[in-house]
Image (cartoon, rainbow, N blue to C red):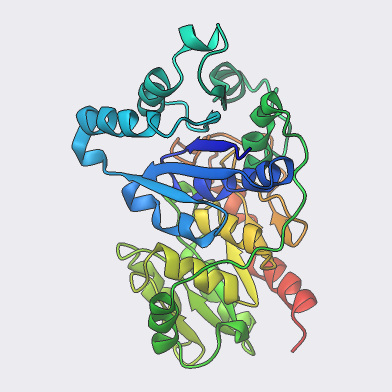
Amino acid sequence: MTKKFLIIRFSSIGDIIQCMGIIDGIKAKYPDSEIHWIARKDMSSFLAMDPRIDKIWGFDKSTGFKGLYKYAKELKKENFDFVYDAHSNIRSNILRLVIAPRFKRIFGIGPKFCMRSKDRLKRILLFKFRIDLFPMPFKGVESFRKPLSKFGINEFPSSNIDWYFPESNKNNVNSQIIDNCKDRICLIPSAAWEMKRWPIEYWKDLIKILDEYKFIVLGGPEDKFCEEIANIAPNRVINMAGKTNLLESCYIVSQSKFAISGDTGFLHAADKFLTPGIAIIGPSAFGYPTGKHIELMQSDLKCIPCSKDGSGKCKQKEYKKCLFDIKPKMLAEIVKKNIVK
């Protein structure tokens, strides 16, 4: 009998991409399972990359709790066998109360339920008192998989996925990139918080050092500094910041020969697509990649990690020392070792 799963993870890009790693285990345990996923509407498009997700529910947060409750009633009609709350916030709690209320679960009525804990006490101990109870380096993919042991899902074999990208997305990218993405290194200099960003001058220096290589720069429309980075060598660098949607950016990462990124969602995309690359990790605690094809660059400072996402304040006399200590030459050596010209 086909088992139906509901995964609740509304945002963000990086967390959703890491959470997608649970599908390997679900399909290994229940090959014929039907998988539904509810995400924030503006974040849901790239879930379509994975053809194993049968239905994507895009929640429009502008509809508020009234809209969410309406969604919850529709989801309840699906009669799920398993519900996984991978977000653990107010919105996901509302869905849980409607779809899998605890008083019913006590008596074995309704879907089986599990939830990913945010480990708030552990976070307080780490960031306030420097008491680290997390397994470090903290790998988000593994933290999303762990709660599924409650469903008897413990094995997550790697799967060769034929990732789906609509032809319209491919055509938009190809029309702006004259040659093939596979001939270029993808640079991802942006991050949600400025304190996680490798210095702009370092990106420019890296491009100058690697003067025989071609690059693509990814970013959002607000990342004006990407143009400054690209202008250091306009004959070798294409700036795609603000010119692609989420799915198109993922397509570029999947096609690039190498990716260099800070703690961003597209770092985890490179991890998922098996695109070799470098992860530049600064103050944040939870942005580590999982795959061995991503080489980790991180300073050896006692103050890190100092923030869950880079939104805090730097306590060093030298601002962002954890990132300034990672020099462009160090990254260039790794690139040359991995990409033979």
